[in-house]
Length: 355
Image 1 (cartoon, rainbow, N blue to C red):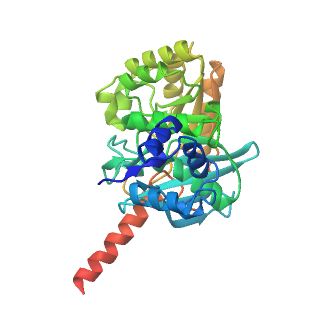
Image 2 (tube, one colour):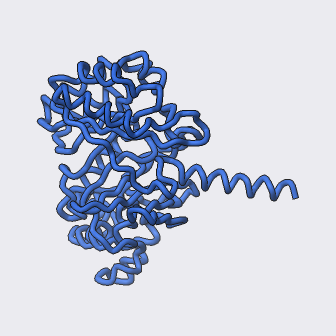
């Protein structure tokens, strides 16, 4: 008999599971609290459940718990990068960033990524599978437990395209903001998408208060298609129409992520074109100096070029900030730590075969 994966279950679903195991419904709330508030890693920690019930849970249920493989600490700004092993041996990474306003965690939503954005390390090895809601939640739980500090903000901006894992993403958001769990406000949750247009329309109907961030990275269709294969499926015009709809339905200001790649999308003409493209939208532009990765020949724009780009947008009354680089002295770019681990593992296996 296949065991039930209970950490992804909502409280009403967990109640049904407990009743199906011949237990009283109120046990579900105790169990839910152990998993999502006390952050228990195995059933034996659940001291107010009887030994008989704990044994029954071990027999019929699984409790997702990620294993920490590596933690990198930035000496510059205290950023911590975590590499976690999943139960099937796959690995994902997450980042803890410490700001004056609180601790922010960036999590992965998939093992690998299908989207193929040219400047991103996450996509180099391709896509393996979607993460369960419990595997997304447990990245935050483990980091909160290990750091000993409360996580106040969550960005789903690590490896993977969240809207390509739509149902698990929705479940994750609702459970993370549930008053019986960590109870993180939806206004403190940001979901980043490369622009899966049909799902952007779906998300606008879900009655959520999250921030939607769009990876734009170009000011016209031609340049966007060069950097992001998804633009061949959904044009920049379609993405912007979906953004306007999202704001109309939710009232939530949009964020546009724009990675500045030296000589590719960082000219004054690019800035002017971008301002024209998004004018009239209630939005904020986040300029990201691209993190160089050895598999690609993209370079970071110079500091003066970035500042001139920002100034140009401001002249058009666009809200714009330059993202502060966090963890530059560790494997800071999205997907780099995971890729380093996989490459090293492969290298060791190759050496074993040769010897």
